[in-house]
Image 1 (tube, rainbow, N blue to C red):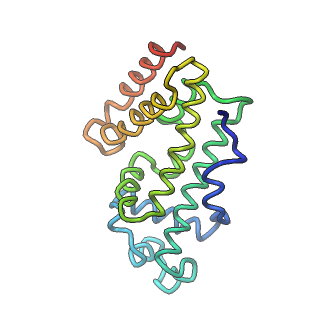
Image 2: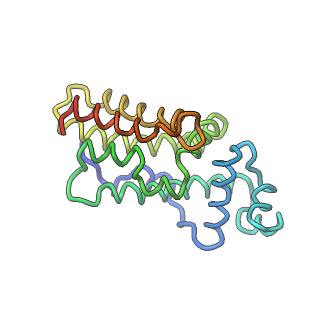
Length: 204
């Protein structure tokens, strides 16, 4: 298995025109509402207020709630697609350690999307919005494939299981050491512990 951007799951499933200009600003405002107030507080009216627009003006850009959700999912997917491209910038697959370093805080999409606060909201939203469930599954599928490639290179006998374990470790840490969480001040120590685990189990 090798990571191939041309067969990207996100590219296949979103197939949307990249958000630019005013639409991008509106989608960034939607992400800010979700990350800071929770997805339950995201509505067309709340988004119009946050974007300094009247509801009718917002509906010029996104006619319905479903249109907004599709655009939001496409925008998040686009940011992560860029993130994957950055991870695959060097020839060949990134090393296991490089991938883990990336996942625990260096992904370019994390800054734009406030990932440590947004993802718990996306997890919750995925329970009621199939589009978001599909989006998360696609993002995780790509990261897991990249981890699995690194584990194969390390000679793992169960690369898929170990990739899922490492992904669970990374994502689970969001609940404990993400911004605003009770143990956020321990984030650097957790990062160091994760990398130490990788070095001990798989070698530098």
